[in-house]
Image (cartoon, rainbow, N blue to C red; front, side):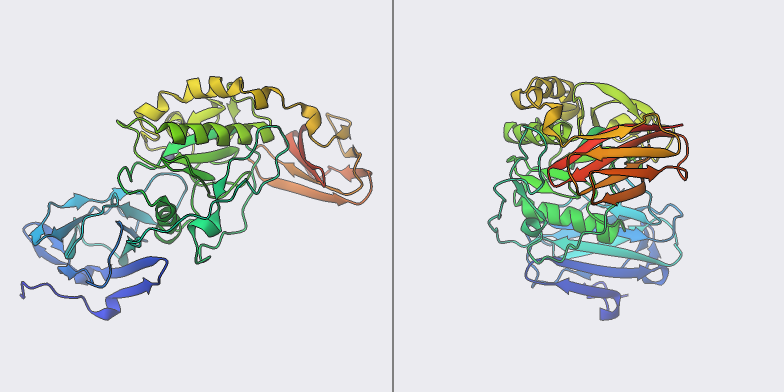
Length: 425
Ligand SMILES: [Zn+2]
């Protein structure tokens, strides 16, 4: 067999290269591996000289769910490095894929090779994300696009068109959820690379094109410089909390905080963002309550690892968001709970609407000062079960089709959004 580097045949890979985003996908079948004493090896594949990068992310997926171990090695400065095992993906949402991911790196590679521990059915897709080497300035919005119904302002943010300047990171039609708990994450990587616009773009690509999710998993991300990035945004169901995402907002602080402390700029933005979310969703930030999706009593400011004790969902013993970030969450919540904007946000700043009776049986009378409004009824799983529109200040709505239980009402009128709990008997 030839021992030289071989560019694998063109049918094996697709080039998705543009000025803005650069991904390469290689599809392997079992026949592309040869056995030797080290295991089942792919060919040695040359990295295209024309592709320079700021960082390189390698991930992969297989539709065969029989557990496969995938390792990769790279030739750097003419030397093959040690094999590195690709981790199974960040557990957050059910997927029909088995996924693999390696922490991104910045070293220039000349060649790469993968190894698997056993034959597999179907195909194994391996994907590279090559972030551009040149740095770009961010177009950060001066304020949050969302309307705020309380005194805590939305922080400035880099929205989707800022971190995806090609506008090809299309968001899906989201399922909404009524947030009761904020969940803190870390990204576990990128302590050196600092062009965070592309880090967020990489996470979007990893979550969508490798993991097969509909969008980037988090609602928000924050970089070590304190820049806030819009993910799924407020009130949209995310994919971040061990398959227990109903009722949550996921905030990821980019970096690894197992042994690193969080930059004060990032902490400041985390506080501002979480205060705004808590304030507009009427979440008492330093309290706890039952999180119905996980069936756990959780602090309203919790961490990904707090799902580890759940008996439902897909918890896998994550250490996210790292020991040092985890250790400060309670003091952060206490600190936030006495913030002036949080204390000064009266309920009366929300548009008022009233419902009668509550508890209700078959019929509910909704009254408002506004003549145009919508009312959404959300069940305890965070799913919308009914939605009404009115062009009058009063409306009677029928509830016969809804099961007995507790529901959250979301009332929207030109003045803003308001919430109330409704019990149906
Ligand atoms: Zn996490």
